[in-house]
Length: 203
Image (cartoon, rainbow, N blue to C red):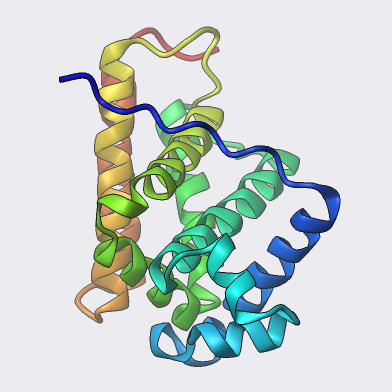
């Protein structure tokens, strides 16, 4: 059976993009103050100055909204990291530094971080495209820090996936109070050593 291919959504107009940004900002603000439970669709709509029906056209559920909020937060982090790249000598050191900087950015807003991670955990198949985007953004952040001279090989990509999984897991264990920041740092630095065991040395 051939899978049905859904047509891609047309690009947002400038006005629609501005509306979407207001919604994401409202979502982040509410989550920062009260976590996952504080993000109620009606309150988001009111804070963003849009009708509730309009909000649901952009984001069909609270989980869709919070996963999109994480996409937005990661995009901002990536922009900041590109302006001030990591200074480590090895790829492992640079990736570990980058991921700890991203972690500390989330640490400054623990209720927002918890809301976004819970949304990722609750996400079902309907949210798969948004979850995939979060994964691609995390991968892009790691690859930028590696500073490869060419495209990553399969072994390097495998290492990146393991690092990504460990970073998300470390975030969850810290948010649940089961790991200290010091332990997270040790775990991240340990898993990042996989990079130096795979492929040619980055430039």
